[in-house]
Length: 555
Ligand SMILES: Nc1ncnc2c1ncn2[C@@H]1O[C@H](COP(=O)(O)OP(=O)(O)OC[C@H]2O[C@@H]([n+]3cccc(C(=O)O)c3)[C@H](O)[C@@H]2O)[C@@H](O)[C@H]1O
Ligand SMILES: Nc1ncnc2c1ncn2[C@@H]1O[C@H](COP(=O)(O)OP(=O)(O)OP(=O)(O)O)[C@@H](O)[C@H]1O
Ligand SMILES: NC(=O)CC[C@H](N)C(=O)O
Image 1 (cartoon, protein in one colour):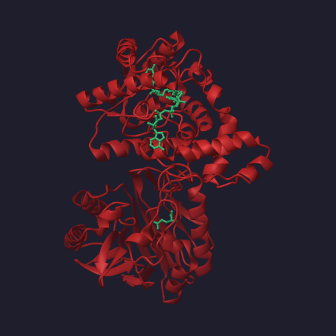
Image 2 (cartoon, rainbow, N blue to C red):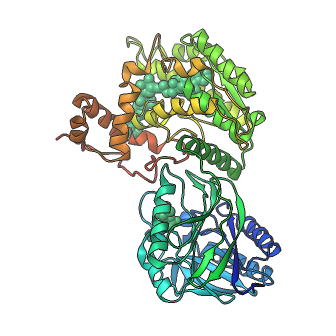
Image 3 (cartoon, rainbow, N blue to C red):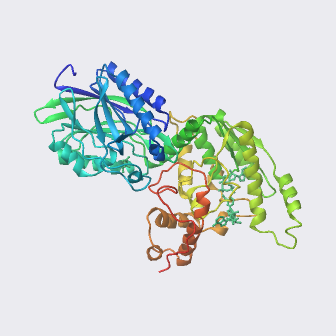
């Protein structure tokens, strides 16, 4: 019970769960609850599905998983009997139907079980496949205050909050599992401002942080007063536990203004999402270190920087694998990147294995001219040697294709596509340049790598080349990246038609060629490593195309 009946204190726990680590997540919930209790809170608020991690996907189809979650919930309720209420999300079976739920624990028992009403089924979400929609659940009491909890997507529509206000809720507490995408924060904020304006109630928005497969949750939780004024803003991407006070006025409950963390700009948020996604994919999968091929080009330099910022220089090792086509400048640039980042660099020349493989293939290829086969062989030798090092040292191999290359299939399958995770999978090449310049000018507390310039200027300014043949340049086989990326943004991220792109001034033959490359490389992406989703439409769950497809947009 609040000491002062006109005051309510909520503890917002913006924390990082791990999918399937139920005991670990419960321990984190308990630690947040202890902090809330020590601060005299009335309730501690954890995000959507926090007990099992998000998104658990088809794990929730396993009855044993749901039973395990419930057992952990009951133990948590018993452990948190004496102190503030605790709100925590989990999947439940109720009335023979599976629900995405949020439990309110108090006095040693489950006092309320809120069921999610609106199940998101767009972009990375498929909740209608997994859960039944719950009825709109009414308010619950914490002390003498009545709180209402729309669960994430529920607050993106007016009806749940409206029904809660009509049935006596005095404050809205929204638990979320909302993954990062560029510009997503503004969309969330617009929805939440609409809810407080419609209902006249203050609103607490609590999101999780951390990476899960391709998704990265960015936190950035906040508290709004009626009218839409921001009372509290928590940081993006960091775990944070914040105590927020509400006072009762003649017009209802009002949040007391507290800390307002500054949110970083888009380039920084993208970079941070790539760093956190990489760190959590590795850490949560049990890997302590990574390795990568460092060519002296910009993509592998950026991936090395992200890996070092995620894990620290002593957990990243790089390898130069020169062929007869590798320019001396590439060797120097790779060395300069490794030195600036403070990572170990080995050199394994591939001329020996290349000559040996070409020699054993010579009888079968007799009379045939060299072509992309010999180019790809080099990439595959590198991929094989890097995977051998991964096996020997237990370090995961990072693969380095940017979104433009991933979009058009400009990479060798079972060659440079080898690797367990791709930190820049959702970053278009033009953004790669911008991101490198940004990183070179920064120092941030969360970066485990050295501050400032870690990628030499020449790595950023030289023309991109795969160096698989003499004098090769990416722009010999692809449109200039400025043009390619603008077309890809239209085709892939916004579903713009070929005719519309032509009307915007792009050359028809180029657009048609890019469209064909995108559609015919679907099979390659299906076999590609996962990477952090940072755009509103990444390659994986956001965009599901058939691999066999003969349709082309030819107006
Ligand atoms: N629909 C389908 N479903 C399943 N498999 C399919 C397939 N179509 C082809 N394949 C298989 O895939 C093979 C063709 O794919 P693949 O062997 O990768 O070869 P491919 O895509 O023809 O060539 C790789 C391209 O990536 C470029 N590259 C390579 C390495 C690095 C970089 C860079 O700068 O980052 C660029 C390289 O210059 C070349 O243009 C076929 O021989 C066939 O075995
Ligand atoms: N000489 C090399 N030494 C080590 N790794 C290499 C070498 N060449 C290619 N690789 C690996 O293969 C990946 C794809 O290489 P490539 O140079 O062909 O294309 P890219 O997309 O321009 O990448 P980058 O900008 O890193 O050079 C590189 O990012 C790197 O990880
Ligand atoms: N978990 C959810 O319900 C999330 C859905 C919502 N569209 C969001 O991205 O925030």
